[in-house]
Length: 428
Image (cartoon, rainbow, N blue to C red; front, side, top):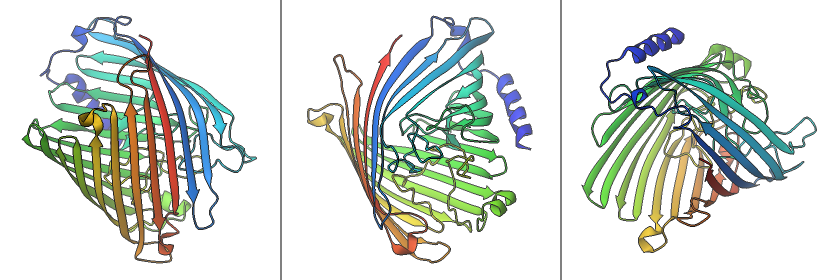
């Protein structure tokens, strides 16, 4: 049924009345609008687990090259996107790798992590007016299919995606993907995805109000819907209040429930965040709540191959209280207090700090009710503003996570440290 909906919306995108300038008519050409970029990334994650669990850590150096051509001139423009990825393991050999939440280098059968990873992909794209159809290897960033790019290498997906911006303020997306490339392994289909269909869009109702609706269908796993409403209330030049609501509803397929020993098939999760910004300071209060009968809570990400997970992207969780823990257990309720500071106002442009304290309770597992967890999150980030190293960024992030004994089936206590150094280079 969703395949038919995607076909219909694609037809509607291509035949929509133009209400904006025609991007294709302004094309300069395949070569003239091309770009080639390389991102050098050095990444380290260390997890000091508690309660007798073995510590995990991985460290690696990556080079991520991306090429994006312009479109040929004419009524229908044609172009090509391509990427090449390489990563070298610097640490995290036998005994230290294998944490699903780190996953820099996939372990082989002897429990040893790969020494390096090399892979690439390409996609052909067609543009008519302000509508683009892309087929091939891609990195989609949608609320119900969002690739993971917060580890050493990014995930990618193979399939078709249509993006239409024919009407000002409105973006529509429809796609079908049939393979997932795991971020820690080589091969176009190393994630084992059967297929995922996605459909939805976002609309800028006013200058300050934006909303979005999306849906997805992961073959033999689940169906998912997403809603977002974001409103910015400006008080003056330096002060504003932002209200951001995000919500998901997932329904697991009966076959997935039977084959994976899952209890229940339904989950609803939502978050509402209020952020007051004044000058260089921001203050956030957020509440997040998970309901439904599925013992998985809100299910997302991971890989169908080896892990028996969803396969819809490691960042497909557009919720306020997602840090090390996602606070997404069955029946969980969580509250956040957050603070952000831009040091540019104090003479250090490019330096920022973020803090969050999140506490969750009412967690249900197969053996208990009323479990709790809490996390203290800190992050410093500095971006070089000028000179030969312009745009180089250094990010230091730490989390202290404590999980009650009642919640040990859902999560595990620990201290996490992340160090990321990213250096983007624009070749042309």
